[in-house]
Length: 260
Image (tube, rainbow, N blue to C red; front, side, top):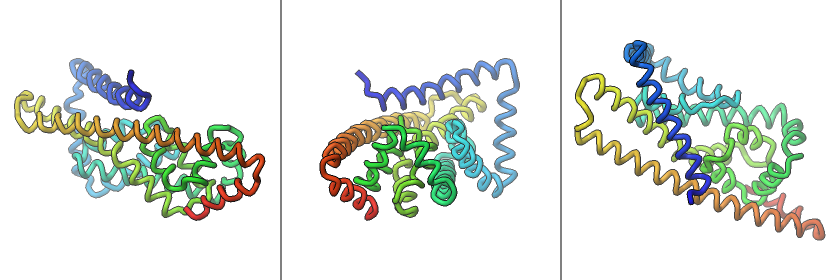
């Protein structure tokens, strides 16, 4: 039986595959090929502005809690694997930094009042106080975590901004790389189809093998992250239960978070 992270990642990849199939069918009735070609030309023509604006658009989507999956995959499609990966990672980090800053400077009280009434968020808050950067890293690896929303929550914790951003970046690398890889594969497939070259070239199959390797690695990391998060949650719940009879234990837990 597949674990939840596996289903989540495969569902997202499958959804992108269905979207690509829909685009192929749509291309039979509309000049989609020309639209894509012109879009690529526009990105190239308006350099370096397109390089600056693309991650900003992704950051805005994160701040508004909008789905950014197509923009992430689009980074690999429009800019290539490595450049697209760096741009979408930068966009996510800008969005996370702004969300953290907004909460820390302007809305900390509101976020605490809004989120900490929910037992799940309260447990996460205690987990961050106890485990520090490890929880930030694991939540970013977990495909089931609403990372855009959690970025606002981080600002209400006692974690330092630099530490938080570092582990957000490290935690997002596998997922961002996978989706940028999907976009770059779409770019290669589209070019081969457009040139009538077919898909017999050895380089294409090497890229496809790399995609499956990236997918397998991302799923493995996500499953490990979910397991470790569950273990951390269990420890926090156990400590919180003990703290009801030993208040000094709760003070110790919160103090450890200040050192993270």
